[in-house]
Image 1 (cartoon, one colour):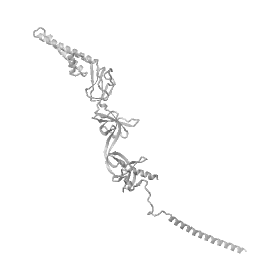
Image 2: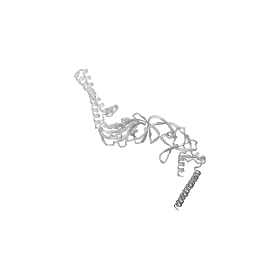
Image 3: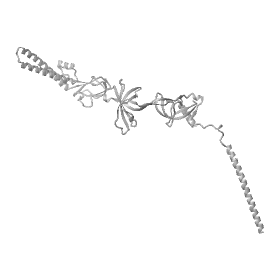
Image 4: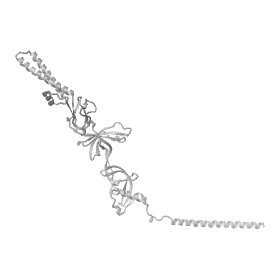
Length: 408
């Protein structure tokens, strides 16, 4: 019984072992078949061949149709010369080195005015007149000196005639000669005193002849120029050197331009540099100027330096206070690729771009860095090079097309 039971158990174990082996073989075979099927499915779902796959669209390119090409003009990039220059904005002012304050040489009351602000005057032209007690005193002295000379001259003549008959002594004649010479000296001094007041010799002779003292002191302009200020009025009592001056006259053949340049740019400016000045009121004209002064300090608030220039204005067209800007060459010109103004597009993010093509149909947008503008062309510092083809007229059209395509 025991032996039969053991044999039965052994048989069951053997049968179970064969069953496990068979199951293992079955599942192994099934796993291999499943794996083979997956590989086939994966191969079937693989990407199609290159011949049937379309190229992905470049997000910065545009292809134009034949009709669209008519809206775009293509041009070859060429190199052009661009000056190395600095610019600054300022305003026109009078040349204070050529500006004169006209004071009265002697005190007195203003009795006449002959010029107003803005008038152009010549040197020697009368600006105002005053009633001067000093001039009256000088002219009275002149009249008295002329009378004394006339008296001493007649006395000398009479004594000389008497001396021929020995009616008077030689000492009397010599005294008369001395008196006459003293009177002549006094008259010359009196004439010079009146001449200081601006009287001419003809006017002095007239005073002596008519024996009439004229207290009217004429104050003329000392230079050719324009009246820039007037602080005179009839009846106003004026004294030498008392401010404000009755009149201020400026020579307007040259004017000043006052500009404040950035601190970083100030080392590029030197005294004597020639400059080209453009005035807003005369957009089609360029004035010649020269740097005359560079400020000795930097404004602590604006961090700018004063640059003062002298501008030639022979036609007297400039006015103080006019806005102006000047350009100064600070180095030798450089050659750079240049694109017409229409060929550069400012994008919405502020970048500057151009459209480059090689076949005049497929256009690629390229970011560039721009420089100066000269004669209708914009300097390109980097981004494109000479010889490449770029869109000029129609560049904005290409940017709009790209924007529309990106929104779809």
